[in-house]
Image (cartoon, rainbow, N blue to C red; front, side, top):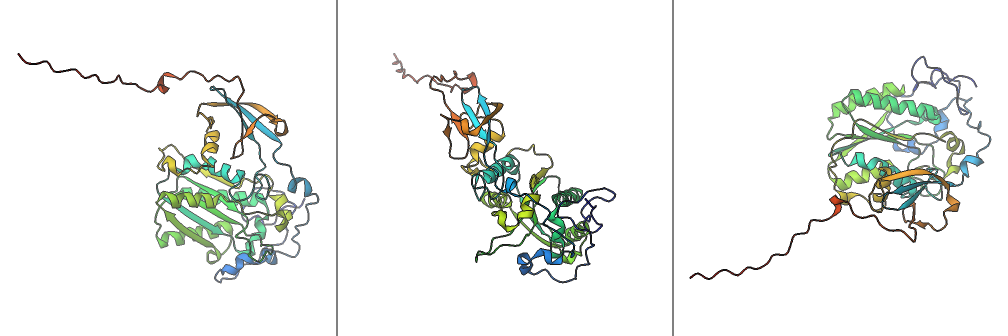
Amino acid sequence: MPPLSLAASAFLPPGQAHHSAPNACSNPLQKAPRRAYPDSDAKTDNLAHAPDTFDITGCEDLEPQLRLRCPTWAMLGHCEDGHSIAVPLICNRDWCPNCGGKDGQAHNRRLASWWSKARQIRSLGYLSITVPPEARWRLRDKRQMNHMATSIRRMLQRRGYKRGMYAWHYFGEPPTDGSRPAYHPHLNILVSAGFIRPKALAELKRSIGRLMAIPHRRVVLHYSYATDVPRMVNKVRYVLRPTFLDPAWDEPMAHELRGHRRRSTWGKWKEPAFWPEQATPAAVRPLARLAAKTCPECEAPLRYTGLRNANLLTGWRLKPHGWWLFHPPDHVPRPPRADEIPEIHPPMRWIPRQQSR
């Protein structure tokens, strides 16, 4: 495969050799015009700015990836209280009829994996970085997306944002008329921050423009923050929501994003939880326990022992949030531990007062 050009490698570290993906190009990118970024650009064809030799038809066989069966295997776990748990290994595709879609199993699992970290944040800052149409064709390579996210994360760390989380959105809101939306990648970042001065946001915008190799006036940077728990929960759910809801929107890109790590976290998360336990959604609570390797039924330590074909889980009870429970008929619960026995005080007894002589 031919190597990536200098413009196509604008997000890659200098001097690092790469080989092109099936949709790489070889012509340099022209300088973007200095004009404001209208909202209509989010719905335009981003390939109109790509060079003439840019090809997205290099993927020949898309059916195995787009029609993958889910789930096939499940991971078995056992707790000391005798519960047997089977957690299906889902495909995590946004368009999957089994685990995809809004509030699907994949969405709730992503939320559960972040939940213990997000609960430590007292003031949640939300950054949304949108790539302009003339540069989106370069992000049709998942390696370019990974390097762009890593570069922005390191830049934020140098500016004092010691911990945070980020996730990619591949598309915006689908059109109401049923038409096919345009590929619209934007990076969503959550940091532990509050109000940011406009001057600091302008400096942040210029730094992002240098990393993306485009004029900073073409960088679209939105920032907001929240301090109340319900709004912070909604921001986390929004950042982790699925956006690639139909592979027919962009089949070559659906194939390219196979195995793409769309989300990550950085920093140390060792502070006590600030959000109350009541803020945890009902669909996330058992999944968060599974992510912490505890039994969702009794909260005892959970030990995973191996894999099993998901089609052979006969006699198992499917729970509402996408995992199986097996309770054997001869199950005898273990005796309670000493710390689990409630302290029982003896009843008070009335003692009559002695009559004075």
